[in-house]
Amino acid sequence: VAQTPAPVERPLNLVLLTRVERYTDERARLQGSRAAHLIDVMGCEVGRILRVGVVDGPMGEGRVVLVDRHQRIVEIEYQLNQPTPERPRFDLLLAMPRPKVLARILEHVTTLGVGQIVLTRSWRVDKSYFQTALLDPEGHTPHLWAGLEQACDTRLPTVHVFPRFKPLVEDDLDEILGPGTRLVAHPSATTRAASAFTGTGRAAIAIGPERGWTDYEVDALGACGFTPVSLGPRILRVETACTVALAQLAFATA
Ligand code: SAM
Image (tube, rainbow, N blue to C red; front, side):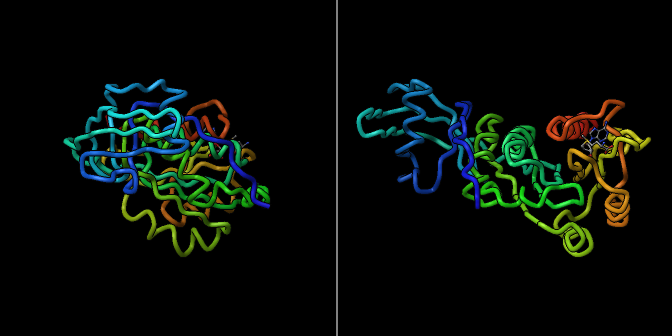
């Protein structure tokens, strides 16, 4: 039975507008829970200036022009005068974590910047984790949105779900990732992640499950071009490892 994910808390660094909400090129109407959050949690009043953006599109500035507390409606007049941000250059291959942990990871890695998130089974992943509603777009998109709104970005990561590791690695992963550096985070590796990435082009990093990748999985990823790398001498929980891995790649790029 699919579990319903908890509601997502949203920051207000950026308000992402959907096509439906933008009822003209200059005005958007937010209703229901989106408006309620702006009114009740963020205390939005008429005149409030907000940064706005369109999913996978440009960003700009908006001004709240109507707040209807009773009917839960907020209207924003906006201008989109900033270009669409670049798609983040890093991709994440992730052995499916516990659903609660996945929800946090999706938000945090989106905040840090990922182009694609590939979720897969691995030997040490509990099969039941794949029953979560988070694997459906309706389940995971709110978490990605929260990450984008936190980071002031509009580029929605693409989420791929592969409940079987072998066919993913042997048949699909190469095409999904395309050219670029490929790393698999493995605590016993001797090469550090930051020194295995030159900082140019795209990079993908694979993070294992809480009980680690098996030797077979590290070898199969190796055959697909992934170099085993260390994130440092401390063994990190999966969600920390995701954050550290993306931060180390970003640091190599800086
Ligand atoms: N005992 C497990 C092992 O040795 O693989 C620990 C797994 S760790 C909790 C979960 C995942 O996070 C690992 O599979 C790896 O991808 C990543 N990870 C955590 N700490 C790491 C480190 N210091 N270096 C490289 N990868 C790390």
